[in-house]
Amino acid sequence: MTMAADTGAGTIEAQPHAASDFANSVLAGLSAPAKSIPCRFLYDAAGSALFEKITELPEYYPTRTEMRILAERADDIARGAAPGNVLIEFGSGSSLKTELLLAQMHELYAYVPIDISPAALRDARARIAKRFPRLKVLPLCGDFSRPLELPAEIAGRPRLGFFPGSTIGNLSEPAAVKLLANMAGILGSGGRLIIGVDLKKDVRRLIRAYDDADGVTAAFNLNLLKRANRELDADFDVDQFDHLATYDDRHGRIDLYLVSQADQTVNVMGQAIDFQAGERIHTEHSHKYDIEGFHALGRRAGWRPVETWTDAEALFSVHVLEAA
Ligand code: AVJ
Image 1 (cartoon, helix red, strand yellow):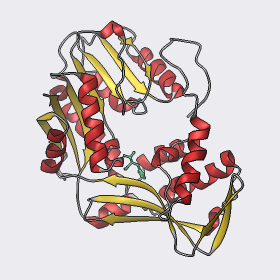
Image 2 (tube, helix red, strand yellow):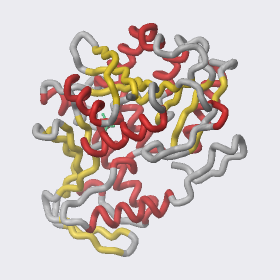
Image 3 (tube, rainbow, N blue to C red):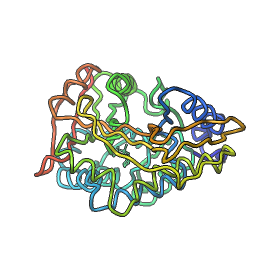
C-alpha cells in the first residue's frame, strides 16, 4: 500500500492509517497466545512481486486455470453484461483477467475498479485506458468489505461485479458470507457477480501449490518478517523461520504458517516477543470449495447461482451469481 497522494481524479485518495495499521496488527497478532498476522500484509511491493512469480509456477494452477476458463468462456460470461451496464471490479490487481472480459463486453457504460491502493488504481486506469480508449474508467479508492458509495455518474445503471482470483478463499466462512452480502448491497438487487473460486482436490496437489519446489511461496511468506524488519524496526532473523503449508480438512482450507526453528526472542517496535522452537505464526487461509458448497455460501449471502464453469480437470470454478 502506498501513502502517495494522487493528483488526478478525486476518487483516488490514499488511506491515511496504513503504517500504523501494520504496526498495530503485528503487535496484537504476535501478543496473542496463538500468533498470527493478517494476510493482507503479505502484499507490499516485494510481496506483490513474489505473488506474481507464484502465479507463474508450474505447481500453482489457480491463475492459469482461471485465465483459461475466462478466455474460453468469455463470450458466455460477457452475455450477462447488457449495453449500458457498469463493470465493477473488486480489487484491481488482475488486469489480464479484466481485459479478457472487457474485450467481449462491447457496450459497457463504464468500468469501476475499486481498491484500497491508490497506486493500483492509477495502474489499472492507465492500462485500461490504453487498451480500451473509448471506455469510461471511474476508479474508486475504498474498502469493498464495507458499504461503499458508487460514483453518482453510474446511478440507476445495471451493475456487474467481478471478483476473480479466489480472493474470497482468504476469508473464513462467516467473513466470506459477510463480504458477499456487502457486495450484493453494492451491486443492488438484480446485480450480478462474476467470481472465481478455487476447488477442493487431491490434498498433495493443493499442498504443492502452496509449497513449491523453487521456494517462491516460502519467500513470499517470509517476506512478511522482512517487511516487519523494514517498516517496524523489528529484528526477525528470517533464517530462523520456516515456511509451512498445511491442509485443514475440517475447514477445507490451506493454512500458511511461519515456524520458529528455535527458542528465540524478537523485538518489534521495542517490544520483546518470545518464540518457542516449533511455534507458529499463522499468515494466510486459502479456503477451497466444491461447487455445491460455494453455491450454498452464496445463497446465505443473498445470491442466486446462475451459471458455473470449470476446467476439464475441475481444478477451479468461475460463477455468475445474481443478487436477490
Ligand atoms: C491470492 C489469496 C488467491 O490463496 O491461492 C498463493 C494467495 N498465497 N500462494 C491463494 C497465495 C500463497 C492466493 N490468493
